[in-house]
Length: 183
Image (cartoon, rainbow, N blue to C red):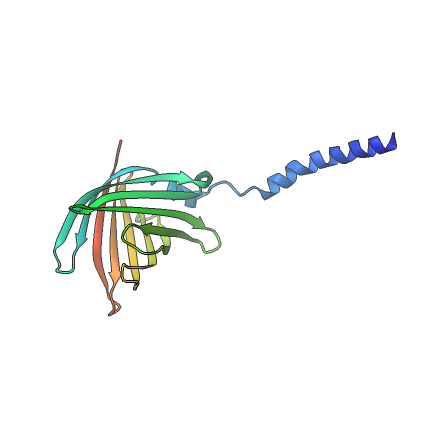
């Protein structure tokens, strides 16, 4: 009888402690930094303007789909376009808030890059702009440093301007993408 009582008591203790232990391991709910990511969720029509080496601009269109993942803690991006006639481009990325760094961190890979780019950035609520810096490799294996500024003009429009740092250390605009959210 005492053995059965001891087993019942032990089971009751485990059932009482287990839920509180599980709650202690639960991550905090998404915060205001995650709301910045959530505001980008949706399907966006894109108009690309790429600046080619001779200084002229090449235009094309694309579609970007942004979805929330990981319980609202990250933004998963899928981008497709025809960069130039007959050349399809696909890119995938993920962006999340890093509470230790107090920055947004991301990873990007695409059909024109041999590896993965890693970025860090900040959001300025006053200007509704997101500025990030990324190191990646180009098709030749050379490390490329880029800066991207995404300016939200309203809830359904944003413009991403990308700058590349050349061997001389100077930034030059390389691309601009104007986005319109699909309704």
